[in-house]
Length: 342
Image 1 (cartoon, rainbow, N blue to C red):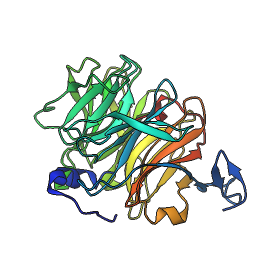
Image 2: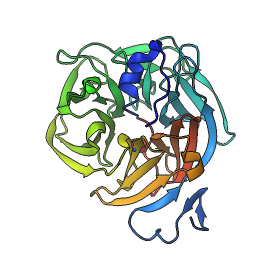
Image 3: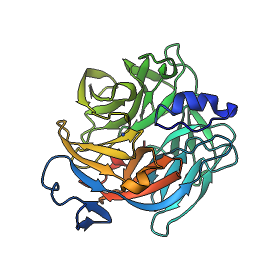
């Protein structure tokens, strides 16, 4: 991935986040589908540009969009990981009108994901640099620190998060990534923010995390190994088993965030390539979502996706030297909670 100039102010972000952040004539919902491949495995879906959201920040030397999630009014929330103090760190986007506005900013957070809690309805953000989980009111105010501190003696670098039905949090912790060591973890935090437990450790920079459709287990992508692991849960806050479920042939790209649709398909974002790989729940490669080739020259990563709840319109966050953009395509199945945030 082309590295942009980084200012000393964001050296920690540079170390930890540059590594993070997976033709035909017919169209479907604005996304071109290759008719020759549409009935076969690994078809190509061409995503179409919705709008530009951000430009490269002079203070940080880059922009990196992440964590798209729909609110109750159908607006899309997006975080800008490298936004400096005073510039929008969380944006609210009206995808119909193609407008956006600042929802939240502060002088501290390096936010890598966003999701609404099913327990209290607040917006939860992972602060990668400071090892914190913070929450906001739906209007972007009332910032609270939900969780901070070490887990089992080691600080977190929380990347993505997923909620279970009861509102407990499951975090991909990329601890150890900057040293190139497999010290990453999956951490569970109860919905009160009081008890944190480690569900899995010795992971290679875990990034994406999502429940399957039945909430029986977690899909977790390991960025520096280009693989997706599956953790079978015991229903009591523990893990019964763990195995490598999918090996992603990413080439120069690495596995970023994960979303899961109503049919259980996995949307694996690719860091270092403006594309997503789509897999079935049994590991078969179903499709690749690509931006148009001309746009792809200045866009380096597709970090995440949100699929409209109950619909198939998907919105993908894409970033690079050209700035931060939203692209849209038709998903293979309807959107659910597991494809709306994280």
